[in-house]
Image (cartoon, rainbow, N blue to C red; front, side, top):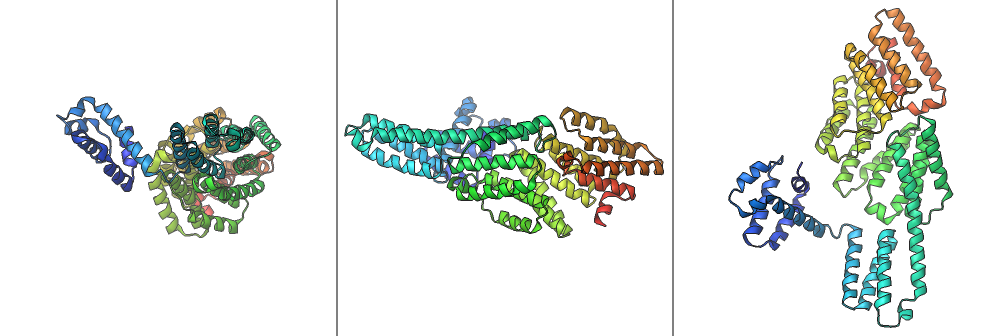
Length: 499
């Protein structure tokens, strides 16, 4: 993959037009060659340097082709910076910081102070604590350099107070952020807690967070996210739902998060819809789904996340309405999106979408397509975390191959599946029942014996449902339970469900 080719192909038509207009700064023949190089690379669907060099045979810049490419890359970035300067609040503050610095260097301190106060106002409104501290350092610089009465224009007491307040706000926010990152590290391996070590780790993070008082809106948002993750790890979806609603309210209230950090809203809608389903609140589910669809997104990566996240729940909605034509159309559109955007998709979302759609396809007997979707998981891109979700996909793979009568294949991979579950600490009582059941289904040919064994596994599942740990398998357990019941009735899984 070539970085320059990737950057050029990511440009929108208007961004390309802006770059070409601004390329007038290139001088003479060299400038013309840079535009030719830009157009030649843009015309390539896949980057082919050998073909490029042939097309520019005889040109002087070919002798330093890597240098030319690097110059073009930097020129495009400068063009994008200018093009998007007004879209990002940080860019506005950075510009004011630079203007303040220039005016200070010219000795125009009153003008510098006027520009500086604009930056301070924006940074304070959007709780940009890091930039606010940089602005404070410029306040100090003006204080040290100004020739007029320092105490009249910049009392040292004010500087001390500003420094203390900024430091406290930044420190408080950083503390919550540190706890949040520790929590995310746990979640990256397993969203639902299945062992006492992780349970204790989640509990410790939650308790430490609750000891703190959030001193800013952004810190409050992070603290609420910690509560969401804590309750979700315990499968306490009623409480996590309340915290998600609260977090979304805070995000919409926060000027920076509401306008510029839109991925937070997408993630929260995803969680809100998930917990609405888990708690059986279909009225709230339909409302949130409509609100989610209305969400206006600015940047491509967030649009991709919103599109795929929405698709997960639209799938559930069409299934609920028993609208198979719309459901299958959605399957095709989403599969195309995954293939198109591949590496740009957030890994956790990628896996969640795969699970949702493979589950839905199982219900409609589209077993070959289930396997095709699992193949999407392995290709776009490789994911090596969220082992609990990967365990669910392994179950779906076993089910699909069994329904397609690939019994020998199912039997052959059971050992590998067990190894994966053991290695990643995902083999609970439930997974043990799954492995034994599939082994029986593949090996036992005597109908009465198989029926007896499957009946016993169903009883084990019912006993397991009464245990505390059953809630940690709430995605896969009802699916597998229905699968076993379908085998007891000697029906295909989807036929048993659709009846």
